[in-house]
Image (cartoon, rainbow, N blue to C red; front, side, top):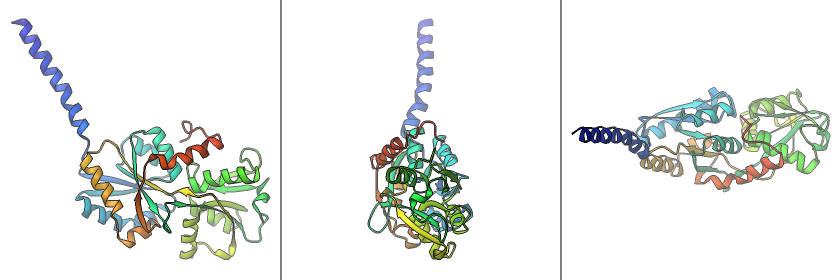
Length: 291
């Protein structure tokens, strides 16, 4: 009789332990989805421009949507890592960093611009300033955005090293200004003689009148960069993941697409960003040590 009771106790404990695992295996289906957008410009502006996206996702997914902009790239990576957001619009390199820290996140959509899922960094200088060509950067400060930014740090830094043998450790002084628009404004004002940012973002800043095209010189473009990916947590239910994927890939609203500075979203996967891992190796960047 004692053995039977002991068996029943063990069976009950085992079943209780297995139930949460089974529920976890099915995935999460929260009533609210937290969607993070990359802090590459002023946060208030990003949130304001994202209101049509919020309404679209709420109508399409039938869920409450919270749009958030983190203070910087590293805090967005950490938020994804610890499950404080479900969906994130990453910069290419910040996605690679996030994937290195949170292997289960899944990229599923990439922006298409001018028919291509790639874009470029533009290296600029102050009009009439001391930098006439990129060779003149030697011995001077050079403006970057966030250290985890692709087009405002990784790509232009590799461009300077590969084409001009200019190493940021020894040949010029990197100045990190946080956002793309901060780089453009600093170069325009002559606070730094040269810098780099996303070409689509610069075009948008000029179109809005934030940057005066006559006060800067666009020197060179980087090699093509895989465009910004949208990634989601891998522990969501298959049905929810399919719905989120479809919401972006089938998006037709011109106003929303314009806020992303793209014409459509296309499907993507992790392998599309291997080129950035290769670039990080060229620059001898340790992904595990970067924030």
